[in-house]
Image (cartoon, rainbow, N blue to C red; front, side):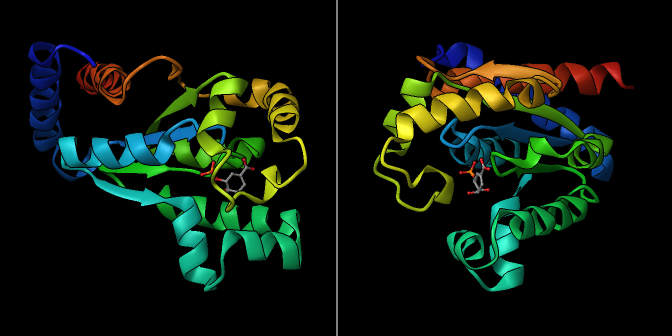
Amino acid sequence: MAPSGFREPVAIKVEKQVKQQGRKTPNIVLVGFMGTGKTSIGRRLSTQLRMRYVDTDDIIERDSGRRISDIFSEDGEAVFRELESEAVRKVSKLYNYIISTGGGVVLKEANMVELRRNGIIFCLTATAEEIYQRVRHQPHRPLLQTPDPLTKIRSMLEERHSYYAKADYMVETTGRSFGEVMAYIKRVFAKSIRDSR
Ligand code: S3P
């Protein structure tokens, strides 16, 4: 946990800057592998910074009226990726949002181009072992429904490494509290708003 005397001033500072920028404040975009904390961090940031929160997986489920796992099993990954790109195009038109994305959003360069248009992209990272511990009791991720999820996580992290590295900032979450991760994101965000003036 970051010392509270450090956390609060940063939050207040960013909030003030968000207000000063009015409607055109850029988005904070969270990318990263499954289980790196995009949803947990994103929701907390949304509350602290008073920025609205949206998740591309939620948009896909809402618009299609189906669960992600059903889209994968009935139509396959390629169809899911198309729906994901559609959701990315929608959220990239927003300002002043915390945008959380599915772990594979980075695989298409076009998605990254869209998300970067109005947003600063933070990639949350964690070790394979830590990710495994976080997701092992969560059955809703179709790509991890295999007999040996840890090996699958390791190989997917390896395959995707160069895609995640395209984010503007990498944020390691292993061994860090939500408060510490958020303090870093808020500090970087505040600085980039300041620098863009
Ligand atoms: C995926 C990650 C999932 C979801 C889908 C595919 C991926 O989102 O979009 O199951 O390819 O890594 P989370 O990262 O939110 O679990």
